[in-house]
Length: 213
Ligand SMILES: N[C@@H](CCC(=O)N[C@@H](CS)C(=O)NCC(=O)O)C(=O)O
Image (tube, rainbow, N blue to C red; front, top):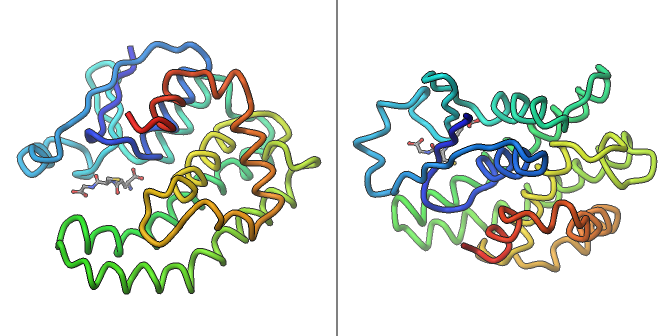
């Protein structure tokens, strides 16, 4: 049985794994580590980070690697080399945009320096948000024939793109609200269509994420 470990809040890094497994009815268990226990537990995990996947009593880390593993198991990966490249670029895009917004999150969450966080977020919105969402839109436009799915078939790329767009759309990030997506009409339609993809949007995990549990 696959075991996933993450913190006690929802985040795309682990959500893409559980959405992917659940989509294909692959059983898994999910351990949520309380944030307060992290300093003590950090040295026990590979790379000192989460998410971690435990398989046959061995621990594995790094979101991209775990996503590829889960997607293969769930038949939500591709065999074609070019399509694999497309999927992997979406996973790398998710990492990159996360790394760019992370300083403004860390300033507030870890350092409790809310003024610094506000300034860093403003800079992110000015310099990074438009560029990185345009990159995603271009990727969709260039590789999808109808802008429905990145590889023309629902895959871990769509789960990842949906989850990260949802993060920015949800209003949970200060100074960013759902109207940001209006600047990217192709991506907006894509995102709203995935929201309406019944097999995906009826998953318990989807509901937990969108209902904030
Ligand atoms: N390279 C890792 C990065 C994972 C990561 O940044 N995890 C964060 C939470 S989203 C974490 O564990 N932070 C706690 C720490 O670094 O001590 C991956 O791809 O999964």
